[in-house]
Every structure is written in structure tokens, then in C-alpha cells.
Length: 199
Image (cartoon, rainbow, N blue to C red):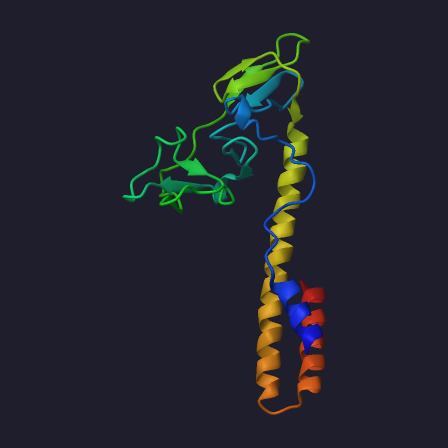
């Protein structure tokens, strides 16, 4: 019975952290500056509270599919734009006490990111999402796309594990009404393995 409960709790657990070093570093100690993202040999964007090609860039270090961005509301249920200068954020970003989120309404959407031109071989950087200047580190658009794909796949996999874990618990619960505990444990374990292989 203990092995089944360990298996089910491991399968049903939520792993919200994505392993590895993030592509965008959180530079909150630098006033929220973020690394520019080079989108071509001649252009870059300054991410931060803006969207570009279906990706929303929230506070430093956070990005998600634009369709997943949520609207932040203050304690009174009004748009919370004074705290960070925007009402949008990625779902995994922390909320201050009393702050809630909701899905955007039809016409609500993040502003587009500033697209700058790379004019010389000097490094580029961003001091806000609307301004670029020279700096040391640049992130490639392809790295953002890879990390976003990885995050999406991990969320999908975790969702499948959670669904299978709950279903296996139900199989075990139903089985114990008429069967032996050991038989039910084996049946539930077999169901879990079958469910995970189908995901």
C-alpha cells in the first residue's frame, strides 16, 4: 500500500519549476533591466511587459505564450497597473497579497515590444521595453522559442501525470470496495502505467 501511495503522490505532484538556467535572467537588482533578444542579424527587441510574435514577456525573467498572459487586479478588483506599470503578467509570476488575476477580456492585450535596429557591431541592451543601448549580453530568439517549447511540454506532461494519478486513485478506491488490498494495488499500478504510456 505504501508503494502505491508513493507512486500516486509522485505522479500527482505538481512541479512548477522548470529545471536548468533560465534564458532570461532576473535583473531586478538592476532596476528591472532585461537582456535584449536578437530576432535577426539586424533587429532586436527589448522584452518587458510586452508581446512579440505570440510570446508575452512579463517582469524580468518571466515569459509565456501570449494567450496565457493574465490580467492583474488590485484588492478592489480594479486593474492593478500602478504596481508594475502594466496589468499583464505570466500565470507563474508571484502575486502580492490581495492581488488576483483573471483572463483578459476580448480587446485587452499586451502592447507590442519595441523592435530596434542593430546599427553597429557594438553589443546592445535594454533599459526598458521601449529603449535600447549598448551592453554585454544578448539572448537569441531561437533560445526563447526552445525554452518556451520545453516549458509547454513539461506542463503538458505534468498535467497528464496528474490526470493519470487521480484516475488510478479512483480505480484503487473502487476496487477496494469488492477486492483485496494487494489485488487493488496491483490493478491501480497497472492502470497508472498504462495511462502514462498512453499520454
